[in-house]
Image (cartoon, rainbow, N blue to C red):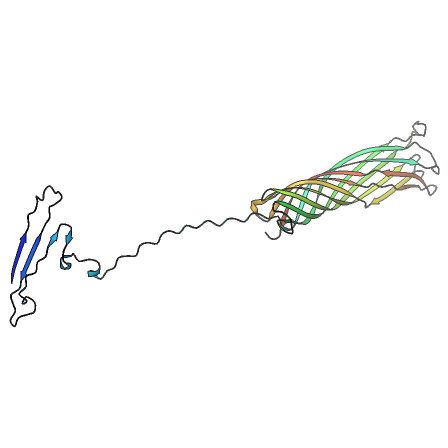
Length: 316
């Protein structure tokens, strides 16, 4: 075998600059094998030329990934960006139940007059009294928002409630003859105790933010109030007594603010209500003569209530 390696002119290797054209000629002449042909027997001289940075013949290429049985890894997939899901706005639509507690203040006028059948005729007596106490109870109702033709942000509903309380008051009026002279004995006593209130009300409001509702309310109210009157113009039984248990109707109006805590089904509220309920007008009987001798009249009862409450709304 005879191998001839000829190299062209090469520029200085140090320091390195862009080289001139580099030609490498490789001649390999393989002596003919006996019988001719085959490797080294073709009598041919193979020349391989290369310039800097380029191999002219595949045989001069450096082994690549394919020669090693490897393949180029697939490119990493591009990241996929998705929008975070938007939280649905709170809806007031649904029914709820809850409890409340607060304070109440009542005010009422009352008067009394003796009739001609009375043993002693006296001047009319009148009083104005007020009282206050704790009130608490339960409520339930339903609201709609953004459905049944109601625009989003507007809330309409209906609510019923029942409250227990003890608003008691006692007032005395002087015992006078018709000419204003004191009788010198006894008095005219007015007693009143409101024990419960119940109402059915419509509600209308606006969601100032999705989970805060500002509303007004109005409806009818029913109350249970006990009235007692006692006119002692002489020692009993020469006295006139009246007692009446009133279950009257009236009206109620007010407003409040509700907050769905953390957009949950629990709703806190603060509410103010004004009740106006019909009074009572019983007659008094004088036991000594078994006759009706006095007439009593309690004017309309006014009650102001301020309370807080907590409700649970079914559904979302």
